[in-house]
Image 1: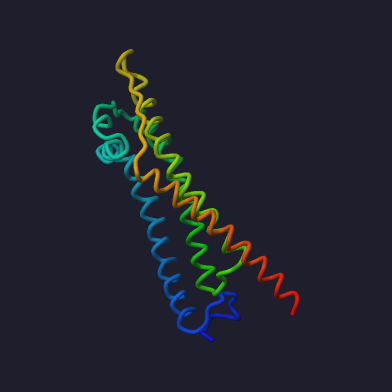
Image 2: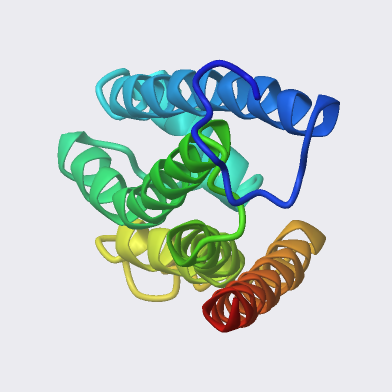
Length: 191
């Protein structure tokens, strides 16, 4: 048995288990670095006005260049963007914890399934929040414009669609994992 693994309920043995442990440890680092970078860069994006403008251009396209961006609107944009960023960070924290479970050899467990399900919910939510965020940004930042110059933006990209589908797949896989765990526990109780 690999050092650091104590009777793991993985259903994997030998090289397969060792590969999963190595991959999971690497992915823990990747998600940790991602979390730190997201917090730092998104925070900086709303302190540096030109970076805020870039966020608006990314979310709204050319319309983002025409929106007024004073200190109040910059703060308002930060608040609106904070919602999908918080959901993304929650998902990344859950997937980081999931990789930690895998690294300890706990693959088919209720805990692993719960973290996978939460990550799936976060991915699905990102797909739904994309259009809502763009609409909220355009409305909020153009609210001070004179009548007839306020903007309503409705967007839905293929990335949003894929996020909804991938999130749904992850939620379904988590449900299958949870059921497999229940059946394995039930079978183990007969022995």
